[in-house]
Length: 442
Image (cartoon, rainbow, N blue to C red; front, side, top):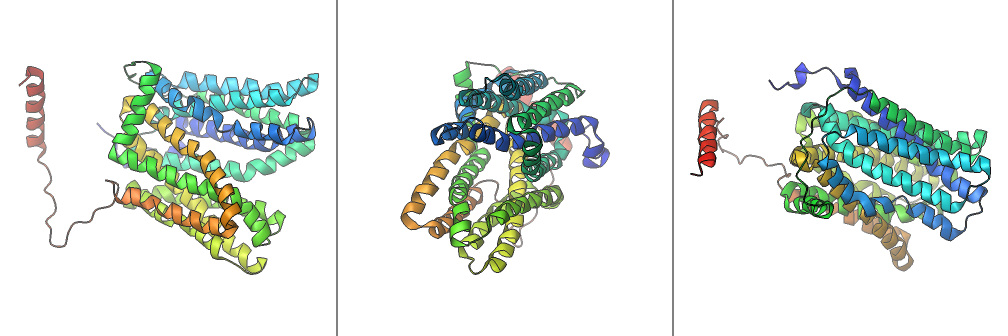
């Protein structure tokens, strides 16, 4: 018998979900620490050139572009995903621990840092591909919105605490030893994943070759009306959001004259907004449904950029406005990400869940580089404020993808009678007749 939400214990009382959530929180926090520790190691100890720093930064997106689609195909071939996830964490831990070890032995170099980043990034891509269908096993369908919100809350906590913890560790231990925290976090994640007891019996999909499997996931994501709307929405939002991110720091410093110390504080405010969004999304989804909550989140997405592009005056005016809109966009991003993941999990066939998720990740992350380049080049031509306002208009277009898809909320026409409830006995009879007809070839 299918359990309802009232029959299930709260997620925080479910041991396996707590372990899965704690594993991801530990891993993500360690990754946030390394985002500061690794570049500092390259600059302060190895005197890395600007070109080397560019290569080091590029390693964040390269694994997704190279291996993202194939990772999804691999995940769909597996009967059990947890062993692969544990292996990914152990490989990432070993790569991270190479940095302090190489520093102690005097063999640390920029090429080694780039190689370590590529290995960790590749392990992360494969992990995410396997984690998506694995979550569907650990968490019942009626609680997946709350579960996804919990994961996004951990990302928000990591984005707030990670940079501060990184700065403290760098100051106390030096930058290479601070990377040790990332390796330890991956090990802790692997141990917690190893302790999960939920049995796995995923039905693997029939494979026709790695490339054909990946293309099949891409074809489904583009052909399915709901998945296509989610994909197009994510690509549109990420393109303009990255163009905005590419210029907003310069805009805050040069146009709004915001002190440098306040920029980090405004970033932390966005993380706090993410925690609020995680708390509110599950409650709003229970009342209005994930489709409607996602639509509202997309419609509200441009308001942060619009406010930043229009605000002016002294810092006493601009900082409170940007803090308020930063709080709003933090909540919106978490709400949008949560509902997007839940709807994708609901719509994608079980044997293609890994490939669909990998396709989404590949497209949405792949467009980030193009958005950043576009934002920077466009600012040279039209100016910083104009780019901010263009990005606000661009993100507003994303709502059209949902509005023209089955995700759009439909209200009954005035005076229309509600659709009759199907008779369960008749439905069962018709279903059996259909099955019999298929089996007999009639």
